[in-house]
Length: 147
Image (cartoon, rainbow, N blue to C red; front, top):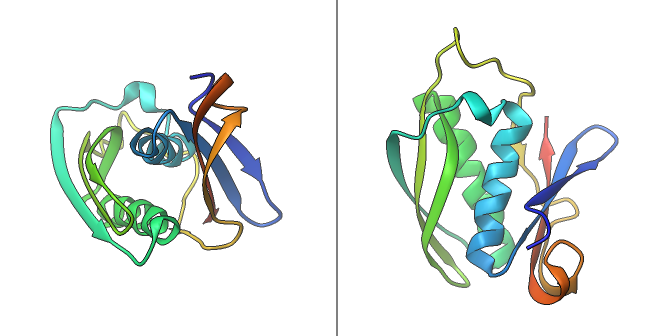
């Protein structure tokens, strides 16, 4: 795989396009991209595990639900995530184990506040080429965040 994600600049928001050899990897890379926008992940440990399960009407809505659940856990549980293992993913349901640690203000300096994943310019698609490696098939997911 050529790259995990790229940042998409937008007028008042910020977005990401994340890539993966399969849909699980693309969703995991989208979550990684989300947290990398908010904090330097090099200083975040992964000793704590949180199980996350979300459902939605389709894969695109599932991506938004997944990312918004992670934002919710950050806001309510004060936890930062840096590693995501998606165990189950189909058209309407995702189950994952997310690894990270509680926010420590002495060590973790927030870069950007993300309020929510939005439906604007939302995409989940299978493709060839960019992001997945020359001549390889894979998935590209795109989402904009309200900041």
